[in-house]
Image (tube, rainbow, N blue to C red):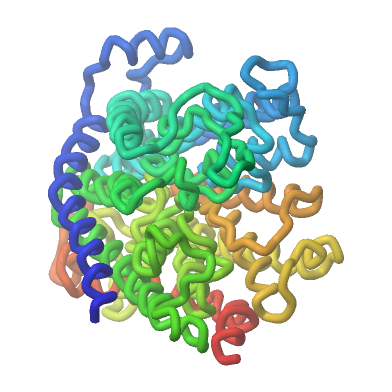
Length: 554
């Protein structure tokens, strides 16, 4: 009981912080994406980019703009990695290998932030600050922009498939939302002890007469947007388990708060954009239910800790920081895999088999609890359409969502979205186990070793970025495979979402009738939760049986 009370206390405090601030940010986000005014700094940015911020783009143009902008980001980041030894503040580090530079560029542009390298031993400050941190902002902005376009498509009527302006949405996301919050968060993190400087390695004398090398850098500025933008790439190899990135339980709580803030606020903003705040509350409630369930299961698994050693220690402490303990580590694990963040404050490879299975399953759901900034919202809305469609079949009526009929073409796009990530994931795992180069990097044998590979592909295909550990992924095989998983896992669903938004924006609005399913009531929350667990979750039962389930039973 003494261990349970602090666990409940931190969850309650985190929930209170979110309850107080999410509605405020939701209103700000809704104004951001519906305002017709441009700030001075935004107008300068549009002139530099040579775009018309008031042009209302067709969904195809919107999608091409997002893809083109991201392609430029991949090329720029790849060049930085390959030319690092010639750049200032390189700290003497050489160029990244071609496959590693490709993987890193795709990783950060897709908001995945998977890292095959140790940040403090491979990248200089310029690459960290001007390359990775910049992509942390703009990749998050791309996801938020697409979510805004989808909400706008549902809110509009007979607009010819026009869903807004990508560059306007992107710039506003960064300038009005991400930059101000990240600036404040970085200052708070510095006050809490997170490192922020441009120093290189410092050799310190220890109390025992030896020496120790301490690596500094612009950590707090990257840490703030890493969490706020649900990015996850750490400045150091052990990510948020490192005391320079996450020194105290208070900084740990702040980082979890930053991870959850924007995804939950996006749900609230959606309700305001479509003109019915209750719709946002319903979507947010499903997100909260799924996150709460995952948190409870992971916390139980890690604090129960089957085995003699964990029982004697009072819980499974292997791979966890003493300053956090099992409860804070379990909560962080649930938060980071329920979103698309990928930051970790403990090694998931050291989680118990049930705990590791839960965080893996959270990613497989599509990271909709509450998901990444933007991607979590549009992922949940697609499942809401599936729910409405299934309910319509039960009563023999053409389904509709927010006054938009769900016809054959709409369901074709929805089906393609629902199947895209599972196909990428399962094919990727099959490729990994079919070639000698895949299992060659696995540390453990048996079901746990299979889980290490499964987790890596799942993390890449769902644009999470967290690592299970125990897998040597910095090889040409894994860098190439995971790079492709990240690339298609990000942009294929995004294109389908924008196509669906265009269909809705061009459609007339149908008045609600007697057979219309109310999508703002508790019944819909229950149905949507069930669809998320059954329609999506059951897809992965066979592959989960081969890994964490077998390991749990053994």
